Image 1 (spheres, rainbow, N blue to C red):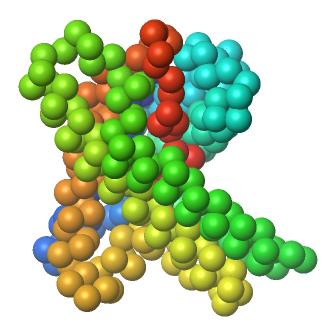
Image 2 (image 1 turned 135 degrees about the vertical axis):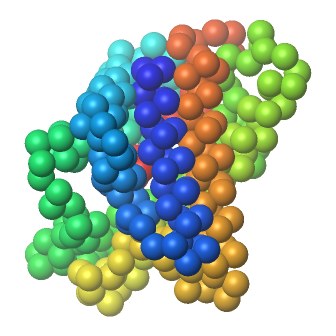
Image 3 (image 1 turned 90 degrees about the horizontal axis):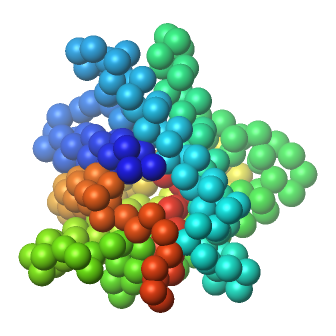
Length: 268
C-alpha cells in the first residue's frame, strides 16, 4: 500500500509537470493518468519503470479493496462509514483499470487515445444514456465537493494521517500540501463532472472529458494559462503529498481517527 501511494504520487506529479509545460507553450502527452503512464513508459528503461508502476497500482488497488471489504480502519456501517467504504471500493476499481492500461503498455499496446470519451459514446447511443451520463456528472461534482474540496478546506484529511509522532514542522507541511493538493484535485474532478453534464445535455459523445479535457477547459478561460499553470502546480503538490503519505498514512484505526478522506474514484 505504501509503495502504491508513491506510484500514485508519481503519476499525479507527471500530470502536473505536463500541465505546467503546456501552460508555458510546450506540448507533450495528454494531461491524464494514462498520459502520465505513457510518459513514464517513454523514458529510458521505460518497461522497468512501468513494471514498478504496475506493482504500485496493484498494491494501492488491493489496499483500497481491503479497506472497503474488511474495514481495517473501522469505518463501520453508519451512513458516513458506508460512503467512505464505497469511496475505497471505487478507488480499487479505478486503480485496477489503470493497472490494466499499464499492462497494455508493457505488452506494447498504446491504443489509449480515445478512451476518455468512448464510454460516453456508448452510453449516449442507448435509451436513457444521456440521463446516465448526466447523473454520473452530477455525482462526480458532488463527490469532488464533498470528498475532496470540503475535506481539503477543513483539513479533515489529517484524520487518516498518523502525524502525532511527527515534528511540528512536518505536521505543518503535511497540512499545507494536503490542503493545496486535495483542493486542486477536487476542482479538476468537479470540472470533469461539469463536462459530463454538458456532454449529456448536448448529446455530444466527442465532448472532451477526463482530466485532460478539464485542464484544457481551464486553459480556454480568461487568464487560462495562469489557471492551467496553477492547476499544474497544485497537481505536483498533490503528487508530492501522495508520495509522503507512504510515511504518514495511518495503517489501522487509532483513537477517534476515521477515514474521512476516501480515495477519489476518477483518478483518472
